[in-house]
Image (cartoon, rainbow, N blue to C red; front, top):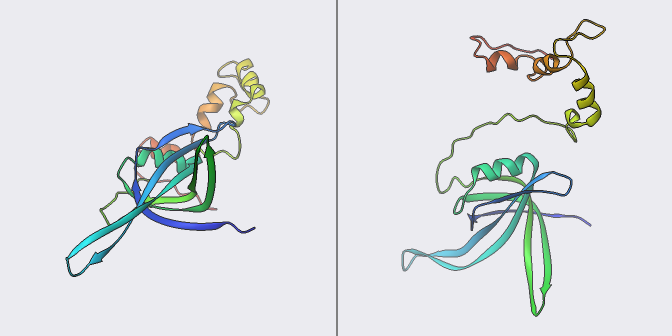
Length: 182
């Protein structure tokens, strides 16, 4: 079966809510209202004819960025996988339309936006530093100790590896950026 993808333009009906899944992945959810209508030339005004409401969920970096960037009333464009869910709660029945977002952005038809790139660590899977064996091994090493190859181990080794090559100089305010060739 093929998934259906949609793009909707609407406004947040409330502030986004953030949480974490059972396995610890961050997610953000919110609702978007999409107003329907048309411009009546005789009256010279926009007439609204109703609205559609979508539940939106997003995960990982998109979830963090959405939570930190959006608030109630924000005009947004949401692109993602569409899912229609019928529900029953006692005597009540209904249908929810959900979008698992793969992209979210401001709707620039209604304003301007400044883009800020954020730098967050990226780990494929769980953070290896959180492994109890890694923590135990690092805790057993005295600070300033050297391994068999003479390289520092323990806390000093962690401090040295905190930044990628070239990043440390930029963070410390070096005058000339360091370039890395592949």
